[in-house]
Amino acid sequence: MEENNILTFLAFILPSLLYAQDRCFNTTSPFPKSVADRTLPPYSQIGAFFQHDGTLTCSAFAFDSTHVLTAGHCVQRHFKENHEKEILEFHFAESVKDTTKKWKVKSIAMPTTFFNGQYDLTQDLWPIQNLLNPTQRMPEGTVPFYDVGMDWALVELSTELPLHLILPHASAELGASKVLGYPYLIGGTRLNHGNLYESTGEIIQLKTRDHKDTLMEHNVCIGYGHSGSPILQNGKTVGINILLGKGKNYAIRFDDTFFNLIREAAAQEQETLNSSFWKIQLPQE
Image (cartoon, rainbow, N blue to C red):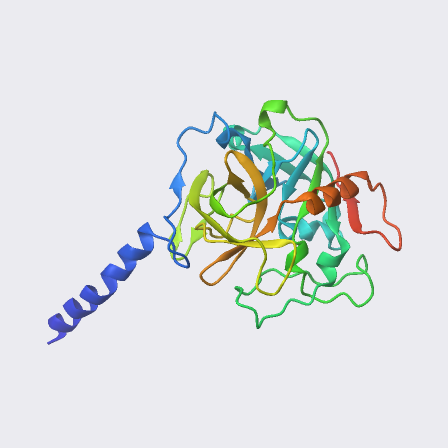
């Protein structure tokens, strides 16, 4: 009897385990594939952030010769008390394991509304982990939730990037898209955190159901570590992947309004009472 029970259990559980290994857990899009050759665009143009201890944190990509874009929650820890003293480094895919080819981060700018958002857990989003704790650096009344519609950061590098490493960008449209990034966990499948992965799918809505004008919905298979990855269409970046959802995922959408915000964030030199962005300087040594 016990042997029959074991066989019955295995017959039930094994297909589920195998199923989780070859397809996405929250959408019907194909499971990501590891990229073997990272020396050619657009693969060579995808980067990742490393802490001073060598920990790979999030995916990212170059917006212009001195600025990198990523998800805001990937770098928000540097806005906590004392964390602005930590060194942060940026590596590209072709040299992600080569510590001699890296760029130090000079400053980080993020929308002030990111820190004041009231995250609504009734929405069909996965719970956010590692939420920001209020500190004296934040405005009075800051709560430990953030505005997912402003979950992006403009990271300034200490030296200029070669032009061949900069991804071209365009406004997002409905239809086929892909995500390139450094995930380490998708559903129950653990991946090699140092490998670049390519996922395909579609942008399915240019605005979210809760009418956040900055967010779009896509069904590309993503996981933990994909935050900050570029959403690509026709070889151009059209958004920043930020959040897992139930049956769909979320990204900051590129359009003229967003490009204007980027220019404003890059131009802001210091924080004032009514600043649109918080900006901090990071150590270089």
